Image 1: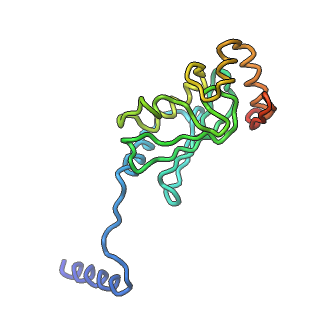
Image 2: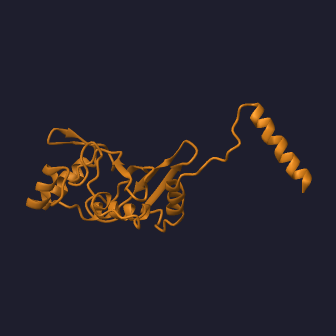
Image 3: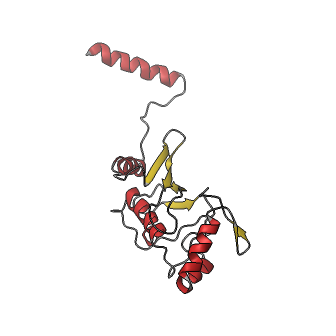
Length: 184
């Protein structure tokens, strides 16, 4: 026991001599919570996959969302989730990495989802966000839009909306805007 203590003291002195601090690195509570959230994700890989960058940027998660029903079925949509130091007290920032024709996602990738704004509570987690995004793909909300033109088309003429979505997902131009090719 004394040898271990002497060894630890010698290591500490050696670090001090090299100008290194001996204080342990503190892990942010937001990172601890994020790791727990990711461990608890219980969704099929056929619907969602995620990638983390714990070594490079531990506060970023990439999501691949794969809706299986609705206007957007058949595509894989990538999102970046940026976790703030105040997580879970404040929601993460979520950005769609594709330009898609959707009433609740603008061409810059901003996502309009109530649980990322006024409905956020610390009880929500990354899986809640994934389910919320999936729901937007299954049931786009024309009443709370970021893309007002898409919302208007969805409400007034759902068949025309469906045609525009299908056209846009193949990388075409809709109303002067080129969209990313999602479906080949």
